[in-house]
Length: 275
Image (cartoon, rainbow, N blue to C red; front, side, top):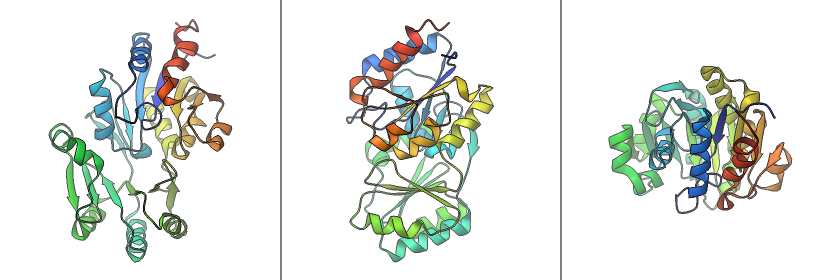
């Protein structure tokens, strides 16, 4: 096995438990890998400031790749290295389509989270809003006028949570040119700039760090992780991943709630004699 120089991880269903915590054994393995000089990175569909709190809360350091690779920071709450946005005309067409279908959606922009309806609140605002505002400079806004403002300044991802007509919405948005449609689980849809995904993000981060893709270990569990897992040298599907995700990955590990990341690090990095 080539020397691993970076470990990149998805969050939900991969690193983070259902209660928002990280298993102590997983943290222990990540810190041991860090002591060996291996860079620890996050690769999440969450916006980077939201993802970065996971590192801060668990004493970890490293780059944060947020919004499926559309926004990349050099560290939690740190400097933005890359920023990609949906072309404005494409975003406006997507908004018109979603509004016509009565969809509820969330826009992720640089330092801003906007929900399509008043009374609709992103979970990070509910769980950690003041901290996001204080540490990350994040603004939260709601309603049609706020959506228009966000579209004019630029949007990196449009997120559609679970709702009754989700499959019909998915079929409709797939007809919009220059839009990447993906999912982080079977109950949502993510709209991204064409060509922007975790595979592109990990390649940009690796280039910035001067690390070959062949020297990266990555973990994920869903469709939006596949571009990363199939790009790096060592892509691991979690044990809880759908079978079609596992089938496309070179490696598999245990499920997220059974220390899948930590077990793989122990086997391939810490006990594998890597120096």
